[in-house]
Image: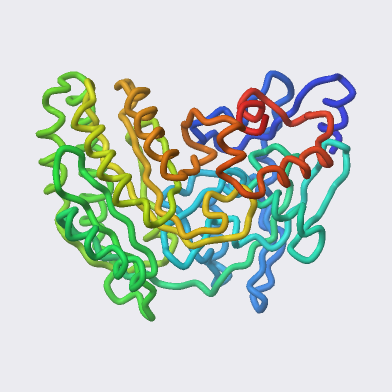
Length: 403
């Protein structure tokens, strides 16, 4: 609160920053930067009610371990756990699972320091309209200091990962999403192959992944060997289709069980840039068909697989899944390789199908488009007018996307 008041008195803008995981400039500022590393404690645990209150700067990987010690877990996670909890929620971070919304749907209450100097606590029952805006807030409403999260009992996942033909996956898509707790796949450009991943809740951790196999697949092949392949592709772009074909066959099928957070999250050490769009679920097939045509016609090569995930509808105003079941397409390019034409051409396809860009990943949309993409966009801006009337928390990115 003191930092916000001081910035206002000095006529400066102020932004809170987390782990710096976002690809956009959502947390950039020309004024005061507040690092949340000191606000990283688990403040309270009500194991019976499955409620925890955590400070905003706690990284997800630490939160997951802390919850496990209390026999609790978050119901779903993405595949990265380096973000702070507040940064992950502010940008609409999500995992995959047709019955799950983004991670912000697990929030019960939020404490936020607003641009008027007020410390405001909101929930679905107290200031519900502020809550609906603050749950995915882009850092535009204030500095979040505490969050109360609704957890579940710690659970085990059985992971099943296998190569598969893309046509058969798309043909079985409805049953795959409907019959599995969590499903996603990675399409390898220039091929008809995907790596299909299914995670389902089971009663016992009776088939743990051997340490050597985890190292081989997740560290050696997915990071070290893949990094070397990306470097080769950057130096010799004509090799990329061959690299992609080899990669599509390199990871052998595997099935194993483990604690949920260890199965959901995997190490990602290969550097890349990323764009992701949430689409209406029934737009996935035409979007992928157009994406394949784009990849084949680009003057530059695409070395990274394309990630496809799924979420259920939610009611948070700036959630990508607001009001609809979604399919997400995430496109990547290895750092140092051309990406702008690839990203802009895919974005044109995604927006023609009603796509919503991930707030923490590269996109080129502005408020004119986003007003039409989000039914409660004007309501979010009205809450912003109340909580930050002098735009203490604004920056160039927010000026573009919020107007």
